Image 1 (spheres, rainbow, N blue to C red):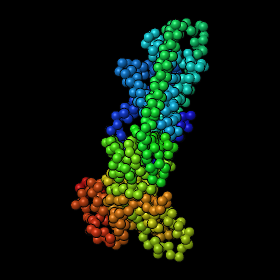
Image 2 (cartoon, helix red, strand yellow):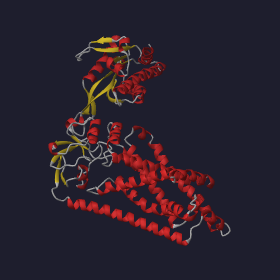
Image 3 (cartoon, one colour):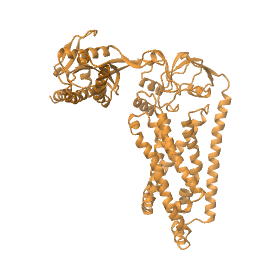
Image 4 (spheres, rainbow, N blue to C red):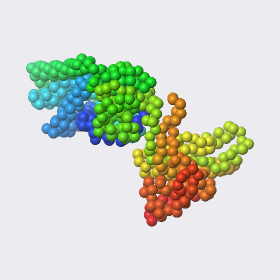
Length: 582
C-alpha cells in the first residue's frame, strides 16, 4: 500500500514547474495558513516517525523499546510537549476541515481524494488509542508501557485497527510531505531514498509489533505471571475500561458531528450560490459556468474540464496559470502572494493562477499548460526573457576530415565525440539546446547569472579535459585528433516554443546567441580553443581589468565584445585562480 502510494505521488510529482525554489519561498512567506499547515504537519510527521521507530525496536528487545518510549514521553507528555503536539493536531486537522468546508465542488484528482480520505479516517481510528493510553494514564494512573499496549491488543479487533491506523497515518504523512517538497530539485534527486523509507518504516513498526505482541499477550494470559504484571501496570477495573469506552464513543460522535457540519456547510454554500453564475470561455475549449466565490480551478473541475494543477490547487506551484485574453479589467486583482508567484516565473501581466482567481464577471482565458503537462499555445506567454550563459562548440575541419568517408562512419564519429563531451555539460548543470551537425549549443539555466556563468565555464573546462582523453583513443586507432572551438557568453535570451502547434520545440533566440556563435568562430582566427566574454567573467566576480582581454569586432554584433582567449580550455581554471590570488 505504502509503495503504491509513493509511486503514485512520484508520478504526479513530475511536471512542468518553473523556478521552483522561488515559488516555494514566495508561498512560505505570504500565506500564513500554508505555513501553519506545513509546520503542524511536520510536527505530527516527526512524532509519528519516532513512534513507529519506537514500536520497531521491539524486534531487538522490549527493554530498548520501553527505554525509547520513556524518552519520547518525557518530551511529548510534558506541558510544553503536549501543547505543541495536540496543538499541531488540532491546527492541522482544523485547517484541513476548513478548507474542505469552503470547497464548492468535490471534483479533485484521485491522489487528492486519497489523501483527504486517509486524513478523515485517521481520527476515528486514533481516538480509541489516545483515550486508552494518554487519558487512561492521566486519569487512572495506568502505566501504559509498550509491553502493556501490544500485549493487550495483540490478535484482537483493536490490534487490527491500530495496524491499519499505522499504515493510513504513514501514507497520509508521506503524501503530504511529498506534495509539499516535490518542487525542490534536491527532493526529486532523493526520491528513491524517500520511497525506500516510506516502505521500510511501517514494515519495521509492524514487525516489532508482531514480535512483542505475541510474547506480551502470552504473558498476560499466564495465570502465574499476570498478577505481577497487573500490579506493575496498575491494571484498570472493568468500570474504568467502561468509562474509557464511553469517552471514546463520545469523542467519535463529536468528530462525526463536525464532519456533518462540514458537509452541511459545503451544501449550503452551493445552494446559496446558485444565483448569478459566472461564465468563463476557454480558448480552444468549452464555455463553463460557476458560482461567485469559486476559484477558476474549482469551476473547471466542477464542469468536468481537465485543468492541470500539480499541487492540487493549493497555490504551491504555477502550473494552473492562465492567460486572461478578455475581461481582465473586471477581475479582482491578484493577491501579493499570487503576484509574487507569477513574477517568479516571469509571467506576462495578464497571467493569473486558476487556483487563486475568483472570477466575478465573464472572461475569456487560455490555459498555459495542457492537462498532460504539455504547453498550450499561449502566444507571448510562451516566451520569457532571462539572463543566462550559453556555450557554442564546433569541431574544427569536420568537412575536410570526413570527405570520402561512408555516412555511417561519419555518424559513428560524431556520436562518439558527443558521448565524450556532453557529460561535462550535463554534469555542470547545463542542457544541450540543439545539435548543429558537428557542433552544439548548450544553455545553463541556473538560479542566477553568477551560477549560470560559473556552470558554463565549468562545462568548457570539462569538455577540454574530456577532449584530451577522446583524442588519445583516436591516436590509438591511428586516427587524427579532433580540434574544437568554444565560445562562452552571458546575456539576455528569449526562451520560447517556436513552430507549429503541437510541433514547437523549446529553443532560445536573441543577440546573445549570435554573439556566442561569433565568439566560437573567432577562436579559429585567434588559434585558441576557448573565448569567454567579459559579461560572463564579470558575472562570476572576476576583475576583468587584470585579464588580457581581446577586443573583437564580431559580424552581426552591433558593439565590440571583450573576451578572454584561452589556448586550452582546461587552463581556464588556473587562469581564474591566479587572477583571484593576485
